[in-house]
Length: 522
Image (cartoon, rainbow, N blue to C red; front, side, top):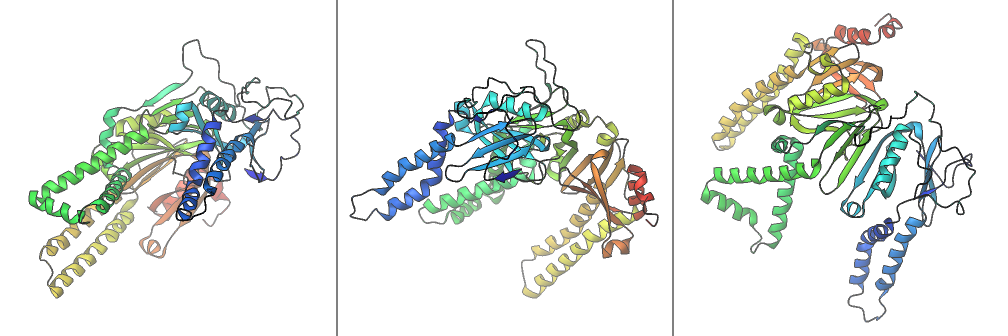
């Protein structure tokens, strides 16, 4: 995706320019006004005590609105056989170009004001850049048609209502059935029978799954943060400004256990609320071409499509909280998303029963051994290393706490806390070793690790682009190494922790037998 001051050459045969939906004439001025509101308020407050009768902020207001209207008139886009172009800018015109064969995902997002008007913002991500080409906004049917046009090479409707008249932009006519870019041929989806959907539904949200919300770390932290912000806000308006002390006194009067229960109840309610806002109406479907389409959101809806040709595997997440109550979640390992997890475009299943998540993963990758099969353990050296790394810090912390308690005469209950370090460290070491494992199947490489945040990554062998065998000083002493699997998808690399060097090179040879033959000393 590149930006240039003018339209690139060689596009005389491109399709007609199209505009954003006309209903954005209502939203663009509003959005511009919101962005300019701090400046307008600053002008108003600065002139509040002035005797000057001229109100410059009243002059600025229509100018801001006019600028928002001008944004619509100066924004247009078009698609030809090779690329999509977006041209925008009121003062400084800019043309952004993205090659069609580099498009990885297309997201449709509809905030409340978009949904009221039947619009959706289209965000197009491409390979090789973190920037997105954003069309804000099109009608929802036009956005979905554009998504199909980009991902599945479906020809655009020649009579699109958003097209700019030919009198505005003179272009040489072209065949509307433009050719797909070079690469694997993608056949057009056959038309479904009347009244029958062409998409296969893979997953739909069950409201009983909200029980998993408080047991995810993200849900718990978000709820705790909201509770803290709310408490801080209430503290500003309390009579004595000591809401924390008042809350503590109230909890002591009724028992600390009762106060803790009420606190957990508040966090639980907030976590469930966040789950509902994020995943309400979640539905995952697959079209005849194999591409996945996810839709979710209560106030702001989001639709994400992942091209089947870009999918490299799945990641089954089992954080400690979810694992304790039989839950899991699923994400896609796909190219084009990079590290931008902000929008959660890679989510294939919200926190849900582990059985449901595994069945979905199996349906997507079609490799039972990779999804549910037993993994190979990492051996005695990895087992010993897990316990050493967990128990040695636990012993040191316990000893330091005991020494400080004796020297400074602290509360004797700290001795009990120090004694708990050892069983906690032992349990952590046991869990961390149990999580380690790897496996190679006919089509996938599987790695798993993590105690508090456990992930099982099923990665397609054809998506692996490189290998690294890494040994730290302490790993060399223990006789183990970390095998780093490099890919262009997901987090760009995944690791098999603390395997023996022989196991690491054996895994490489199993996936790519010819690679090690080039390095006879390996």
